[in-house]
Image (cartoon, rainbow, N blue to C red; front, side, top):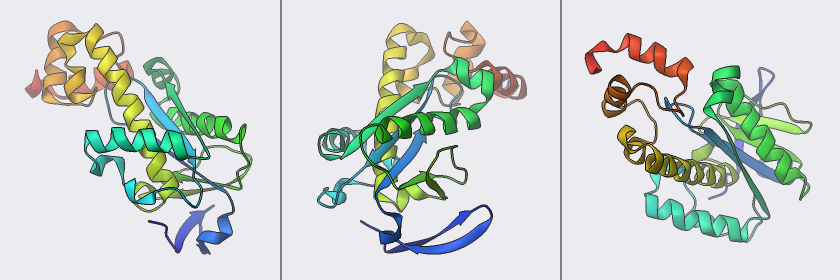
Length: 214
């Protein structure tokens, strides 16, 4: 699926551009803004015209098997791709929004070091600080193939990290909830205390405000 045009906002102004106006597009997206634990992971991807676009979708709408299969194809057939994860310590230090933007910027920089990029399209409503034209696309992971591909790489990588964390700290159930704020996760924090990968700026506030789950 390739969109013919979209209306996007830059510096508060709306404009409609043809897909051809973007030149070489790099799409970027993140996974892990909402969890109480673990990293935030971002990916950036450049695709070419003969990529099998039919495999792409918002990563949340794909099954785990479909995401893993798509990940392999993206890594094999993309012009360039990169994935960056920032730890819970970075998130606690600079907040989740700034961590997400930084992760997208760093993944874009890795891609840009290996191929030319004219435009960066990112999912959401805020752009990272990059030296090229950049547009934030609300629900871009449902509209822009390059962002869809980035969302798949970001989610599969972060899920893989959380599965490894589950092996190290199985009592927290990370394999099941991937660090998101589920009742099971809150109960584990109440019983064992915050895990070594807990985002303390999230967890302490959330646990204090959610006594009914403890």
